[in-house]
Length: 223
Image 1 (tube, helix red, strand yellow):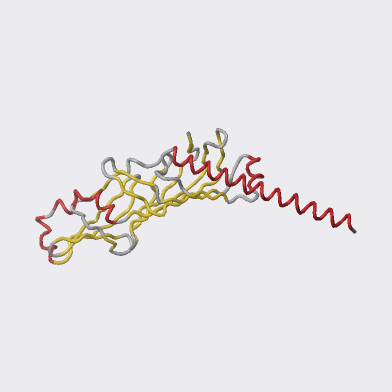
Image 2 (cartoon, helix red, strand yellow; image 1 turned 120 degrees about the vertical axis):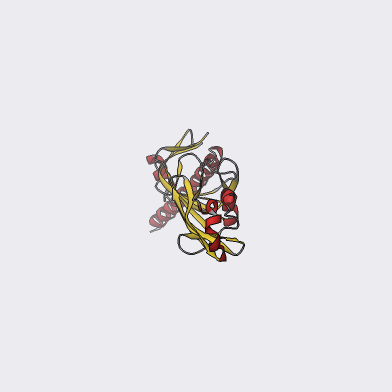
């Protein structure tokens, strides 16, 4: 009986040590993946990384992780002139392989999303008179102007964010013939997307424009 008890205690101790070792290893891997995101230009500040594979060491030995989540407010986008921040960016990555002694990763599949404030987005569209951009309903945005406003549809076209189907509203609609330039579709291209990311969707929401991205298979992050 005493032998069985000792065996159970021994197994418990070993099991605890293995769990502790697993958690230490996953912490190191998460830290290395976060560094890789910064060194590759995905983030301007170190993101939070969470590896969901349990146990981690089993997946690490197999050489591939199925669940890696990355979150940060430190992602910025540019149109080549102005720069804006993507808030609450989150990327979900799978089939992730560590390379170069855990200093880099290769992504097999992934997608991400984040929100850009309307105030920031207006920087890219200021040339079209769309200052003070606001939410105007599903798929729609608006901007105020003397005597009324402009409303249009906002969506993605490749790596371009487009505002088209523009119409003058209120008393300003009487100026339609004098404001042809304001009614031309406006677009800007995200020229500074992090390596491997492509814009998949742009959706107006009350709190900002939600941008959704895809991550190209084989995208590498790291030194």
